Image (tube, rainbow, N blue to C red; front, side, top):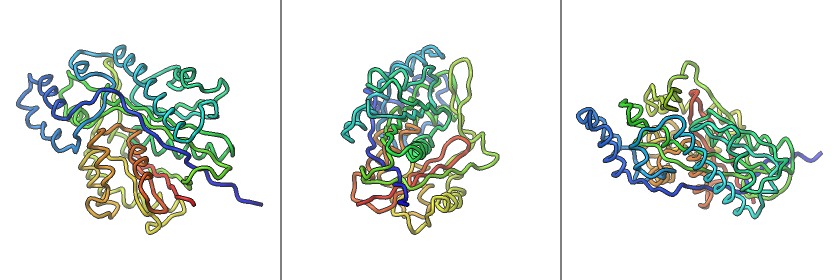
Length: 353
């Protein structure tokens, strides 16, 4: 009996909203908003300079963030901007693969920065041209790990039904969580880091299309770490939780966890030609290099994506993967990210002839 073909990545593509926010402009706007606490803000302000971010994209112009916003205003912005980005990212992935929306059998939607019922893929279905019988799988709560975990889920779904086409779309509008009334270190750090964006991927098993096989995926959750990252939900919307400093945690713990992740995917450390990582921030990237035993500066694409787009949560790792796959590269790439839980997620990809 012939072994089933591994799921293949047919394309990966990205999409960005129209408003470009320069870090210097964001810093000045934040200083104005928090001006009543100028002295305290100035002590925290270096995070804007040290974040490794030059620009990021937003679904709203910068003036929007100076006005009070609650659940209704944030949700309207999420639904409008999220649907537009969903369609743009999905269409870009379809165009790259030479496919139509009507070819899609299953849609996996990953988003943790807003609430939509009906979910985003249902709202976007007619505009995009999805079939009425398409299977819909919306996923909430994965945060920054969502792009990697979502790709692993898409691969498993494709493998379960060879020949079916699975569309993964990650949409995150992180900037909508900004709180002008909440002067906290977590809110300031989020303001310095967060951007909006979307990414999509097409996966299919059972044929030889696509130059990249998805050979495995795995996750690791550290016990007793639920408070490291997440959302607080209150009357105003979703408020960011950064209860512990993530860079030192990553530097201390990710390396050992990665050994287990690789083993569960049938890999050893020496098999990996490149790690493609979610760039949560400049200090996080440095911590990842140290924890994974990489030369300083190895994660150059990650730094470029962070500088241009900021931390977009779930889509960011796929922005990195898109650029990694554009280069002539190693046979095996491991895509990895950390997110709420606190969790590390990994997905192994192998180039094929």
